[in-house]
Picture 1 (cartoon, one colour):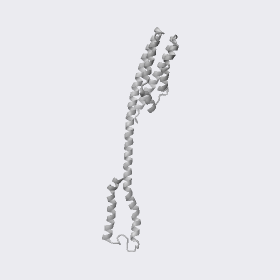
Picture 2 (cartoon, rainbow, N blue to C red):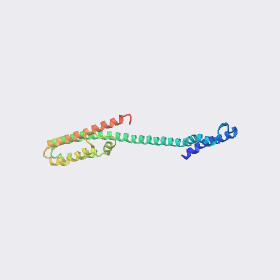
Picture 3 (cartoon, one colour):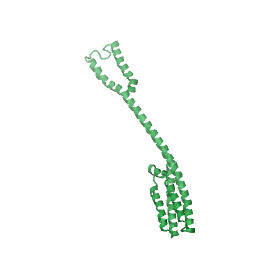
Picture 4 (cartoon, rainbow, N blue to C red):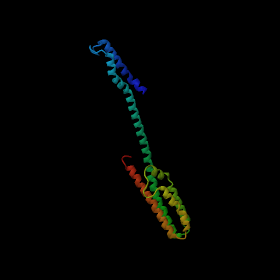
Length: 211
């Protein structure tokens, strides 16, 4: 605010000095008239409002400058956050596509092995499920659900629990290949449904012109 006073204070001083000079040069009648008995009081009263306006000009200019700075900082913060969110959406889309491809491959391999050589395929199936669970641990899924949008089908936390619970369930039913195949197919469908929904949400976000 001091800068504004330094910048515009001279205008107020010049105006006051100008009035003094004009009063000295032109005399009392030019400012008060011959019939006025209270010249000084009338001028002080008349100039009081203008002086207040003149004094307020630097303050108004300072505040407007502050508002512009605040708006500029806000716009910059929004732009930075938007770039980060778009980068997250791209990462999450790639992760979801990889998740769907892995599920199709590993779950299909597991089903073939179970039907062909159960119960000897159970340990291998357990490794495949552990691998799928590690793919689901990608932090991009959780961040995307928190910051952008969450799928309607089920969240990543719920899906991780379902996949993690598969291993003990399979071990308990290792004598029943058809039951295990049914569970594997169910998990495969849940994983791919989640991946499809995430890809759809990412595309919607990235194609939105406001983003």
